[in-house]
Structure formats: structure tokens, C-alpha cells
Amino acid sequence: MENKVLAVVNGKEITEATLNSALAKFPPERRSQLTSGEGKKYLLDQVIAWELLYTYALDEGLENREEFKTQIEEAKREILSQIAVNDIISNIKVSNEEVEEYYNANKEKFTEDAKVKASHILVDSEEKANEIVEEIKSGLSFKDAADKYSSCPSKAQGGSLGSFGRGMMVPEFEEAAFALELGKVSEPVKTQFGYHIIVVEEKLPAREKSLQEVDAQIMSMLIQQKQGSSYMNLIEGLKSKYSLEIK
Picture 1: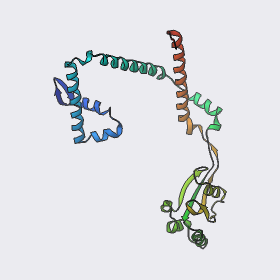
Picture 2: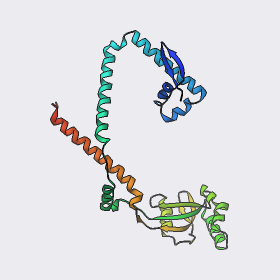
Picture 3: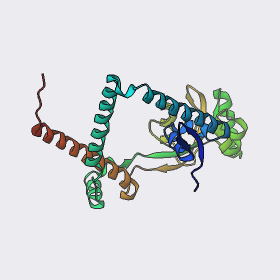
């Protein structure tokens, strides 16, 4: 692909590649604003300005200032230290056997609590809720009743709230939902939001997640543990290798 020259500043070419390199330094949410025609023009203007300032700084001998030398040394220390850390952790590996061994020894950590799948109808009075319950008993489907009467946005899905576990709903609603028999329409349940009519479509018991569901999670955790351990071991070793005085 042609690396088009976009500008030349004091003999220094600013190319498409230069612009792309500058773009990569911006956060992702800002980059999208700099890829349009106006955005690219703004970015090119900025790159030209940086190059002009750099040329000016060289001409003025600013690189000989102590301030510049101090900042260069600090940047050098940070970059080299980070490269050293990357060298330590980049070769850390965790085998599938290690993942499986950890899973088998810690299955209790990988459980999913019991859930219920339920729908509800929300109204602002107990009287109205009782009237709706009677309509449902007389043949009106729960879904149609939700669409007709419910003040909750879930009415668009026939009142469906999907599946939820304990701690995800207000206590009164949760207690009623988990105690309700499958397919049975509840009596009105009062909460801070109003009066709910609930029906439970499915009860999902607590279960142990399979290795396949959590292997990536375990792999990531074990790698982080090994990286942390390797880092600390290196630091302790370096404390013995180099002189250290803490005052």
C-alpha cells in the first residue's frame, strides 16, 4: 500500500503512516472522530505542529537542558523496568492439566445458584390486581393481561422478567416467586413499586458449572497467580543481588 506523503516539515516527511501512528495514541472513543475528512485534517495539523515544535526545540538547544535530561532518564527507567517485567511474565504458561486439576479441587467455587424464570403484571392497587387475577382465571392469558394492564416495561414481552436468582429482586417479590408453584398465578404481592401478579414458568436448581464453562476463567486466574509469584520471586532475588538500604 502506498505510504502517501501528506506534508514536509523542514525536510521531514509526514506520511499516512505517520498519521496512523499518531491516531493510535488517542483513546478508542476519540479515534472515530479523527477518521473523517475534517478529523484527518485536524490530526494532520496537530502532527505538523508537533514536528514544528520539535524542530524549534532542537534549534534552541533545549535537549541540553537539565530538565530534558532528567525526564529522559526517568522515561528510560520506566521503559526498561516495564520491559524487564514483560520479559518475566511473557513466558508464563498454564497447561490444560493444571486448569483441570484446579477445577477438580475447587468445584465448590464454580456453582450457579438456583433461579426462577417468571413473568409479572404490575399495577398500582390491590383492588385492580385482584380484578386482573379473576380475569386470568376466567380465561384471559397472562401474556395478554400483562400487555393490557401492566405498568412495567416488561409488558412488551408479555410480562417476562427472564431468569433471576436470589438477591436480584426486591425481597417480597423474590420470596413469592421462589415459593410459587410452576404455572400457578399468584395472589397480589405488594412491594415498593406497587402490586404484582406473578407466574413462574421454570425453576432452575443450583448447579455445578462444567469445566468447559469456566476453563478460560481458571486459565486467566492461574496465569495471573504465576505472573505475580514470578515477579515477587525476582524482586526478592534482586534484593540479594544488589545493595539495598532502607532508612
